[in-house]
Length: 211
Image 1: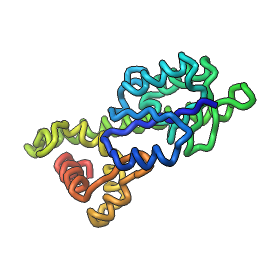
Image 2 (image 1 turned 120 degrees about the horizontal axis):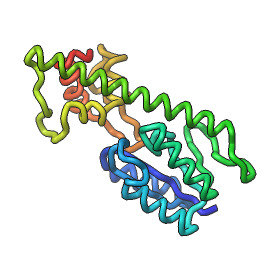
Image 3 (image 1 turned 135 degrees about the vertical axis):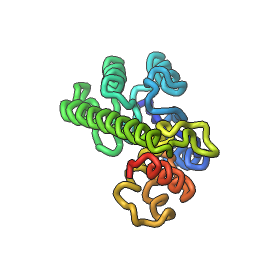
């Protein structure tokens, strides 16, 4: 097997990447630091992985989770179809499933990945819709502040980038900022959150009446 691992994260975490490289010494790492909304084939590392597959240099690709392959259901399924057509086995770590068994398509893999991709896409669309409604209400009340201090991101981009923080805040409103940061962090995906980031996101959500 000529193995590769694809990683996508929104922000660079060099120390985590070095640890990951040591944990998977037999895999070629393809790492993108880019928004998940960018189609797989248009991402720098995604393009390199595609070229490596076409050159016969890779025939087994691992993802931590299906949402690393794309944010929309269509894009995820297109990417998985490309891998299958090229005879590449795809493994989704958090599902413990491979796309092919004995050279044939794994029907369980196809079913579960399609369902999870659709759920992820719907969740993203729902979050964006709630954010737009919150921003509209904020403008009416005169509390909409535009971009946060210290960032070039719009409120929509900030909340989308820190989707895990948004979820933690909504479900644990009385928890301390430090504990929220620990709960929202996901080291396996190179996503580390500081209490200051949690505070910024929480303040933004309060201003937009999202919480």
